[in-house]
Image (cartoon, rainbow, N blue to C red; front, side, top):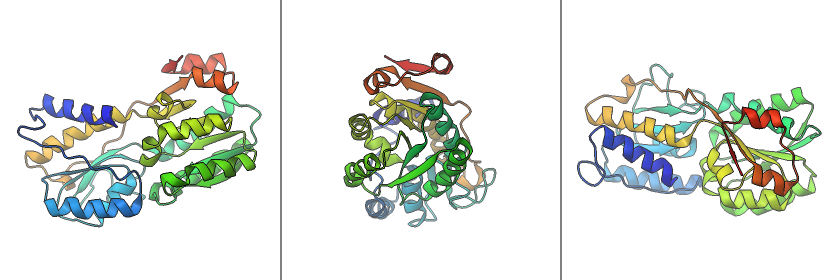
Length: 285
């Protein structure tokens, strides 16, 4: 997350706002824990900041339930309309606007990429955070994609970082041939641990975020988080200059990257097809 926050600070500087001078960014970490996020949201609202920035659906929902007056800029939200954060993308209404990552439309694509890499797979694990409202929508699409590909899914539910090891033990017992990790802020925060567990259990894994691949995951497909945070800075600038969130349409990413970690592929004994490597925006190793 350090690179994403720096991207936001750099974008703010380009718009004339310098952290520590005319603006001050205070960072709070909830690590995807729903209960902790609600407590943090209450603490932040009491401070009465001019703008609140949230990353991911769980944090955004926690803040939505805490304030209707303070402007909120959401970043990397899977489905802001489907989860009830905004009324519509073009007319958000209320005090919330920001950047969607349209992860709902990408869940099926990630499963297809995993199938290209492991053609024989028939049983796939899905690592998901059941406290994240967008997970249900992602699961529906992943399920539809699995049926189309003739694969069975095993749902590995994780609600806190402490449940990760147990989830991987269960996946191993199910003899899954691969795993898809749904988009969730907790899975970025725990990216190194997840990559270690995937390698330990010999699981080729596809992710929503490049940060997971840089930490040792096999492959990812989706928008760059640093770009989305930089995009979020534009909303902060407009709101500080007097704009209302209800008048600022929710934006969507226009670029999606396929990143493959060839070092991890070799460690897993997986051969990434040459044509897939050619399609990658970046390879590691």
